[in-house]
Amino acid sequence: MHKWVIAASLAFLSASQAGALSQDVYVWQRVWTPALKAALSNSLELFGERRVLAAETTLDGHLRPFAIEWAALATKPVTGVVRIDGTLARFDRKRLIADIRRLTAAWPKQAGLEIDFDCGSARLADYTRFLTELHAAIPRRISITVLPAWLDAPNLPAVLAASDETVLQVHAVRSPAQGLFDPKLARRWIDRFDRITNKPFRVALPDYGTRIIRGAGGAVVAMESESPKLVSGASAEELLAEPQNVAPLVGDLMRNPPKHFAGLVWFRLPVAGDKRIWSLETLKLVMRGEAPKHNLTLEAQPGSVPGAVDIMLINRGATDLTLPAEISLPRACHVADGIGAYRYEAQKNQLLRLQNAFIPGHHGLVIGWARCAPGDFHAEP
Image (tube, rainbow, N blue to C red; front, side):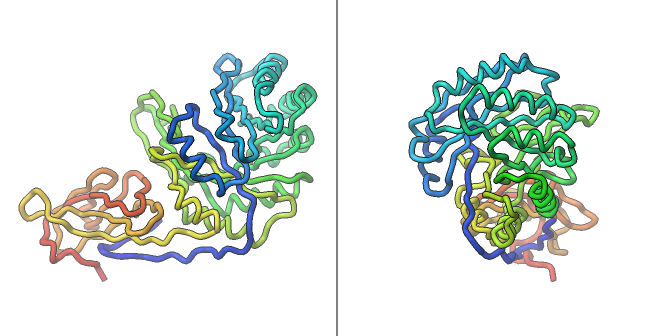
């Protein structure tokens, strides 16, 4: 949690680059827009392999394919990802395998197949049977995603034996208080998994945010990230993977790679217009194990109300930064209010963040107003 004072500019030390990592990226958009194709072109030299969402299951267990433009992916290795909804009570293995076989028949011969199935540990025995039958039916390299919740499951070794490669996913909404990503916990999961597997594995890291939508009773009714959810709720909150939290783990993996560690996969490809994802410049920096410098300043500008000033937060750097959690106002400013993501706390004379968000590089954001002369707007000691 960052605490800020007016006009303060803080710089954080970043992890130094200690070695190159193989780094792939997930392409998770369901519609291939011009912006997506531009993002693929602009990041051509940045990533090794693109792992592209190719299909996902429907509520009745059928497979719904997406129209992939394979020509836009021809210059680099590619893996098509089939997402199986982990909340499905059951699905017909033979029917789903037949669906996947028909789907992959139209793919380029060199394309790999990845299965993304976020099921509970109790279903891993059934999942093993599915993967074994899938491997026999489809002569392609098969990768699977692995959840940290599976690490204590007795059936995990059998699941790993039924796949060629694994991707350990260390980002998830465990609870709003814990956020999307904990670097220390992620490193512990990585080291534990390295002791379990005898095959190369990759680690999926986040570069995105998600909106948690809750019903009247407080239960989560939807999570919104790469695409809007047509779901209403009583409340919502934004959770973000902060670049300054992810970068140290990247640097640590460069310096101290586990025995079977093969590289990273970023979730997901930055695309123009996606407001819940880091910019490409930010991702490039973190991929080197470097955290963005917190080049944020706060300025007072004349407001529309006589005697009041608008408080503007300005990101003077080139990379994305997250909003400060607290901003202290000068003692001379006694009447104020927050705007957008902030509310005013009169007893502390502070602006407190209600919702987290990214502020892009070279952008400014009005976050409140205060009744004080611009000349009184200065840093508290």
